[in-house]
Image (cartoon, rainbow, N blue to C red; front, top):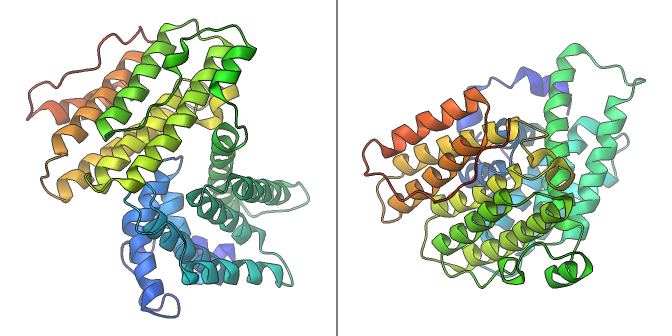
Length: 375
């Protein structure tokens, strides 16, 4: 597949619907539909580029068998194992494995690598492995994407100006996935051992994740830890401990979401964004591109994600959890307004907060946020 052809199709109106010629049968077309409606937006919540996961990847899948097979495999994995949704199985079905192997086989037998295609393909494979919690395999895929990206950026690789924008878009996603991998997948520190190896700067009981009982419980666990961290001296060690806490929280919350049948997917995605919120206030050394100190767009992405969730909640109609979703978003917005000094981002957060509270009594805001310190 030629990347130039893809660029020519980026404004295609068919982005919002399933191409009837997609794939080899109705199962693959249903997977694309599900990706556009469910899997893509959930993956995009991690950032940094909604258009990459929900626009560029689906378009590429129409033109590349490799991307198509990986999209189908990843979508089916999400449906079965659950990414912030209730899992339907603990094991992958044979069609999932078939599509994944079909993509890998096409890459292995290609006479000449299409690096522009293989880089996002590696990102899809990264998501596929993360869904199975195979962090070693996920790390291999993000390393492959980083290597391909370096080759594309080499001075000897002369690119037309029109291709540079596509490369920049891909690069931001690769860097973000690498930050996630470093923060969540690479180390397996035991929190108690870590505390014993360094001067204790926090209570042990504040760093252990109890079994998650509900989404409100998961929310409060992380917001409490953010409050403690922001009130601390924010040393290198306390930042590492906070990142390890967020890592443990993420795994516990994902596990709860895959088991629980009580809450809708949109509610679970709202809790998912607490991960980005917690990482945003860590230094770049711990959070990489999730850190708002390193990447101001990290907060902008959060606000965009919250805006999409508000629209999705309204589109899907009223439900018993809508007030809890609003409350969770309000808490996050209050934190952003109190901690981020960027005028545009504060104003955007305040506008969304006003919309959410316009038809509600003021929900109970998380008390005691420390003074803002982030520009």
